[in-house]
Image 1 (cartoon, one colour):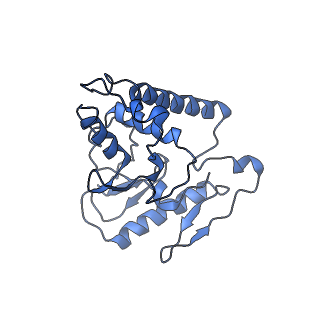
Image 2: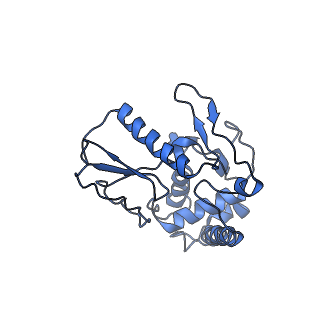
Image 3: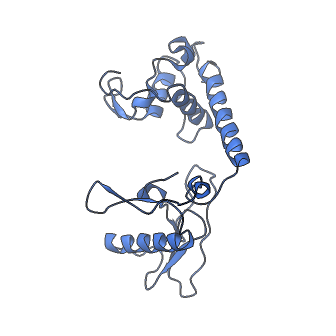
Amino acid sequence: MRLSYPFLLALSLTAAPAALGNDLPRHNVPDSKDGNLVVGLCDGETSVEVKGVKPGEPMTRKQGQAIADALMKEWQRKHPDGGWLAAEATGGSASQVPEPQSPASAQFQTYGAFTERDKEIWKESTERLVAEGKRIFHDAKALGGTIAISCDMCHPDGSNTHAETYPKFQTQLGRVALLRDMINWCIENPVRGKPFPDDDPRLKALEAYMLAQRKGAVLDYGKH
């Protein structure tokens, strides 16, 4: 799998606070003996120390890019056969790091080789979330509704949701909306319940179910 440079470069700063409202795993970067800023790549292993910069001190974009380049250079040094698609800084085109040469390495994800058992675990986990979303979609009580109306009454089996077209301008909201915005609008209005917080597992499950039902549908903005 080849993922674009900007999206995989999640930086972990030693001074960064925990993400509010989430209990996601965090990578721990090594401490600097000089108290400098240490930045980690999202593989949880690669990190660089920024000499002369303390945590919380402002930096220029040029400095930030230099840190990102150093991290990626180190990652590529440790993974010479890893494929990487990097967007060029000045244009919209992409320059490609050499592809893996062997069929085996071509199956590697960016940060390592995964077994068939790994893939089955991921598949089962995803399907379980989708199934939970389906249950909530068909259950007015689980939606927190007060008038016995559930999502499936207007959208049997997730039909006519056009989940794949979001984000888009939504006339009911009068602004550009994410899929979760429209889910909450429906919960608050037709279903007569209370909108879910962004980190509510029910909201995530509903999104997973609706997107799964529409997977592969052709985008057609303005039609839906």
